[in-house]
Amino acid sequence: MLYYRGCVTRRQILINFCQAIHADEEDPELMAQDFECFPRQWYNEGFISEEDFDHIKEYTEMCEKHSAEAVDDYLEFHDDLDDFEEAYCGEWDSEEDFARHIVEECYNLEKTMGDLARYFDYEAFGRELFMYDYTMGANGHVFRPV
Image (cartoon, rainbow, N blue to C red; front, side, top):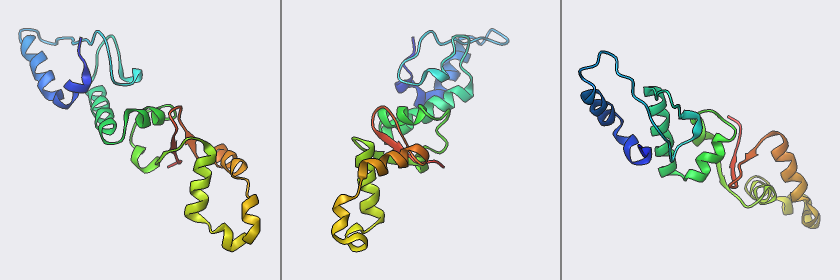
């Protein structure tokens, strides 16, 4: 059984080792018997291609850089990690909290609305944001479309 989080950064070493063990075979078949610490979509009982190794390596690097929860949230909506860093907005407790962040970063409600700013409906604004523009994974990580 291979645990890829530790091995994946040494992908070529693993491939070379496997090829050395089967050097007497013309076209050896290598098989992973189990998987752990990477998404199910890159696991195949029949074989794991070099492309799959590359995906697992990229997954591991992203998990080390951001967090496994953030990367897993992104993979709820996407098949690969090509646009992860461009799409990643951060982690919030709720859609409403993210809406508050957007309003604070992009608008000056007090200047625009004066005393009426206290009546701004952040919950409704959050619903609207996540209807069309943003996604939030199960762990609270938010992504924008790229």
